[in-house]
Length: 125
Image 1 (cartoon, rainbow, N blue to C red):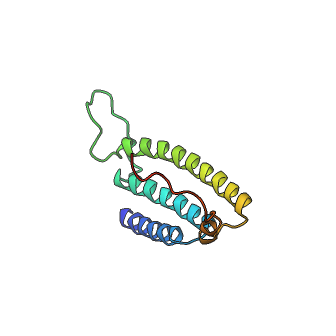
Image 2 (cartoon, helix red, strand yellow; image 1 turned 45 degrees about the vertical axis):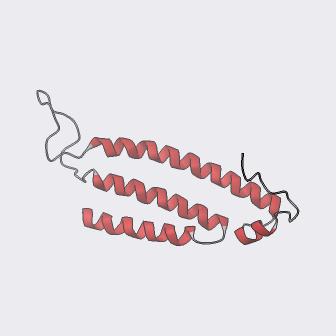
Image 3 (cartoon, rainbow, N blue to C red; image 1 turned 60 degrees about the vertical axis):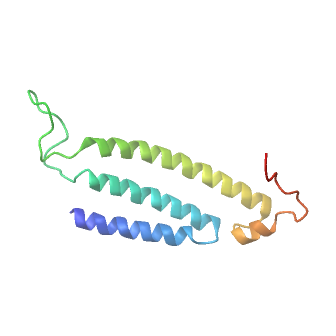
């Protein structure tokens, strides 16, 4: 089962990188969302995929059985899902606000919307 998930992770990473190299904000945002899911699936696969033995320490034992899945990656993924969702919500609001202000989601046109006579930032301290 792990080789199938490894191939799926590779497909997710390649699709995410393809979308993030686009010049449109919506595609970049979708690429970031897919990248987060690919990382979560990678961590989940690294923690072993077993359904037979739950990750619970039996009574009288000091450690998990060798055939049990590692519960740490599962806990990390739960946290990562919440963080990636909040990050995606922030990016969605930021992209929508930029679209409202500039009238485009093309990043090259967003760069063209900057004023030409803007002063340079300080170069030193």
